[in-house]
Amino acid sequence: MAEVTYICKRTVVSTKPVQPGKFFPLSVLGRLMERNHLRIVYYFQTPGGREAGEITKKLRESLSELLTCYPIVTGRLLKDQDGQWMVKCNDAGVRVVEARAKGSVEEWLRSLDREKELTLIHWEEMFHKPYFWSTFYVQLTEFEESGFAIGLSCFHPLADPTCATIFMKAWADTTFSGKMISPPLFHPLPPRRPGNKIPNHQPYTHLINHYKSTIGKTSSVTATTGHAYATVALLFTDPMIRACMAMSRTTRRPDQPNPSPFQALSGLFWACISKVKGKENGLIDMSICLDMRKVLGLDHGFFGNCMVYNKVQPKSLSNDKISSATWAIEEEMAKMDTEGIMDLIEWLESNDCQTPPLMNGCDLICANLEGVDPYLAIFEGGLAPIRVSYHVEPVSGAGQVLVLPSPPGEGAMSKVVMVTLPEDEVFKLCEDDLILGFSPAILLGNKK
Image 1 (cartoon, rainbow, N blue to C red):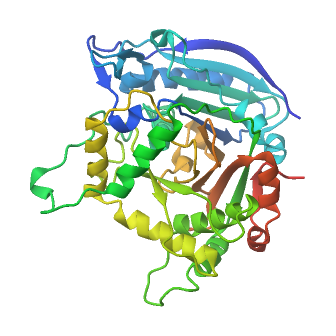
Image 2 (cartoon, one colour; image 1 turned 60 degrees about the horizontal axis):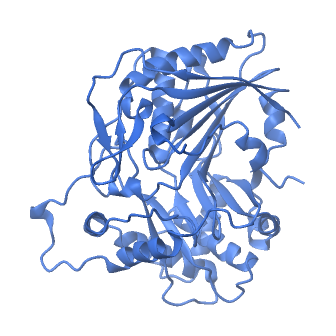
């Protein structure tokens, strides 16, 4: 196994000081994610012959320039007069860890598992004095023979996977061209527009009740469950996705549109994981997790958490569990419109949760990250990522499924599915006949 040597940890600040007196309150959707953080890693191939530390130095310098446009990233947490988190933009900086790994990035990727990958993504839990705690961490790892990795971790209330991906793209743009193409947007969630409210509108009680239940169940639940979790990343090429979509609509009316890749893959893995967990004749509890920027009319560059969780409950199960599961996912996603999400936001604002829940602490979670495109982050010299992994931590409850874009060259509909379950269940899932029938390539974990 390639080993990682940690060289140093330093603080990188912006090249221009932040204007004094700036504060950013966290949104109600952000505050609910207090117990979660993101860990993301980008892998790059590089030509040989570079001096040790050369890439790290350039990236550190361009990061400092980038942070000028991200005062919320270099700030620190404080509580406001109501006891809610906000960020004081004091330019305290981002913690950057510099590291070296043996071998090449190609060798690393050939024998990769969850535990090994997380050594490339530095993270520190919140200090007892949050004001001295960095909410963002970067790890720059150069491989001795060739290649490097950029690990990014962050406090989920401040940034969801879309934000983190946009941050990396902006960093690449700054390194490549010296300027940011799409600057971030910092503003509150939008209020409901009075003229747009539907007459006699009935609140989306199913979604609100899911949040009530999750808050009630998990506010006192710890993330440590005694399970050792493992992750497997499976590459589904374009033909495999099309076959999965065809399988998921076998019992439906011919006039119904095809499910999306996310819907078809979520239905497949919901059914297969239910079987792995011993549910032969039914489906385990499952919640979807979706980015609501488009639904709320927000720009893609909105910086903050816009991920919303919702429980999916099939009305009935046919003999074809995959088709039933996919259809239930489609139906629930269709209900998550602007009015429904505003119902949730308004309910959360008027029923503030003093003890943060663990939103991924009970059900199996299927998160749609199709909209992120990490492979657009092309750094100086045309260095483009060859592989990217996302982890929403800590993993608890039944586990999680993340549906992500695939590396370029696998077809328009191709996806990577990252599944995190208790170790024994991951092994069983990889031996499931339905999964094996698609023959997806294993990119991470369980390569024995």
